[in-house]
Length: 119
Image 1 (cartoon, rainbow, N blue to C red):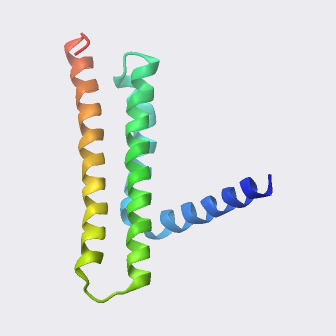
Image 2 (image 1 turned 120 degrees about the vertical axis):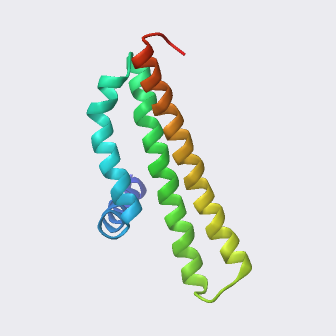
Image 3 (image 1 turned 45 degrees about the horizontal axis):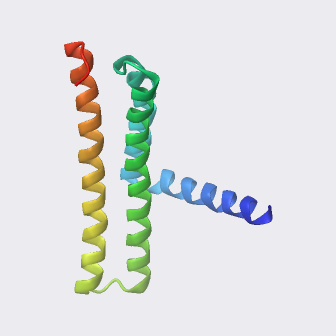
């Protein structure tokens, strides 16, 4: 049980640090806060609503992992290194893929709502 409690406090510490200093994380949290009511208006079912919110949570998850990769790389060396550049670029690509995924899910839900039939 102690491990779970320690893990929880570590997670809270990371959340506070990211929310206080990482612009992308802050923007995604704002997006989530906006998406909670807007998603309810757009979705046509509980499962659709869950998918809309989950897509944003996946985006936040990938952003957190990308920030961890960048912090690790910076802790290893701040000098240019082709392998470190690749690691950071891969993290950025993962965020881009998550953005495209989220935009696709929300775009399809919006089209479904406007057209009035499942796509």
